Amino acid sequence: MNVIPLTAFDLLLTSLAVIFLALLSLPLRLEMASQIVVAALRTTVQLLLIGFILKWLFTSAGPGWIAVLSIFMLLNAGCEVSRRQKRKFKGLWGFGIGTLSMFLTSFPMVIFTLTVVINNQPWYEPRYAIPLLGMLLGNTMNGVSLGFDRLLHNVWQQRQIIENRLMLGETWFEALTEIRRESIRSGLMPTINAMMAAGIVSLPGMMTGQILAGSPPLEAVKYQIMIMFLIGSGSGFGTIAAVSLGARRLFDSRQRLHLERLT
Amino acid sequence: MPKLTVKGLIYHHFGPFDLIIEEGETVSLSGSSGAGKSLLLRALADIDPHDGEVLLNGESCQSWSAPEWRRRVALLPAESQWWHDTVGEHFQGSLAQEMLEVMGFDGNVMSWSITRLSSGEKQRLAILRLLQNKPKVLLLDEPTANLDPESSKRVENLFLNYQHKHGTAILWVTHDFEQGRRLGGRHYRIENGQLDLIASGDKP
Image (tube, rainbow over all chains, first blue to last red):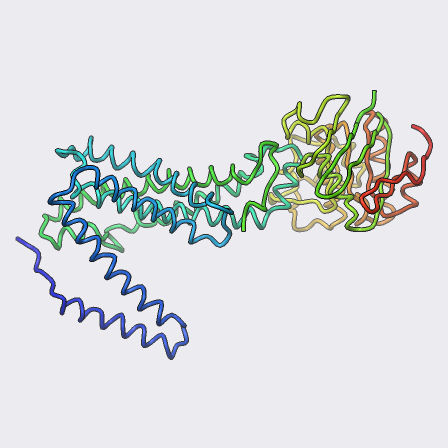
């Protein structure tokens, strides 16, 4: 059993739907027509590009190139995290903290899964490594950017409360208890919701893809369950790391709040 | 031994200031808005970065952790903040009935919701909350600005009683010259980055 190949004409047909949406947005004054077109074009170009890269990686590239692509994906996720904040850290702190948190959580989890769970030879075989890392990074990135955004927004708004708590002799850690908790929760919600809805509301993309490509449904489902565990816990750990590091960066060694470190 | 010693304190672009407040002494401070009164208190409580030395009983601010310092050198901000739902959650353990009564509250106040408090009630509760830390130095930023005359007197008396019992050094920012006189002690005016003694008061 094999997947029916799509032609360029098939893709053109489905793109008509996007073009129609862009046209519809004009009379609705959504002012998104160009964004929709740009997004569709970016999807096409970026995915074709990664398709070619993967094709080359699968056939001829060694572990060095797999590492390069992994770092490239990580750095892009880091940029995306800092781009999505309304309030940002000045300088490279937002990018640095986001990237570090995702690196510390996603990479060990992917390596563990490849070496212990899937136990492939060699363990870095790109057909498994790259999609796994991509799914984990994508979800962790969402969690980290949501958690970060909530943290910086709340600290900005609750400056007086935080400082009053410091004046009463609370540590910076105590003074941020509720804000930190709420930020981590908001970063975790999407993946928890995805796990809740999996199979009854939504059919996760990876599983659907495997089934389309001819895998037996139960094999696809087992992979999907593993992925859900990985992205659920991975994005949780990543969010906790990013919110904790970000919270620390807001205070100096004498536990004073420094909002001028944000823009 | 002096309680609070300030040597060459510089914060933002104010100072350098020197000031000594003895044990049990009240120093009042006035000045136009923007003259740096509140910022001075924030620097003393180590909420804002500053240069120069601040010492408590001869020991530098740096020799304590920041939270320990702020418990000893306690700042009462002009506007108090409340972050939990009820009054009681902002207090550690229970509060002596007598303290509540002095401030005109009954025992039920701890279960009150924050949303029903008036600004005067908030201020009086904020004072009780601060005194729970048993501070050695009090930095008060216009503590009676929102209060009616009767509550103002109550607050003044509460602070003076606390001071009498514990030998607290008090730096009291006030707009009200009469209040400065009532408090006794030295009165400083902060103007153009200068700290001027305008009344030497009666020695404690």
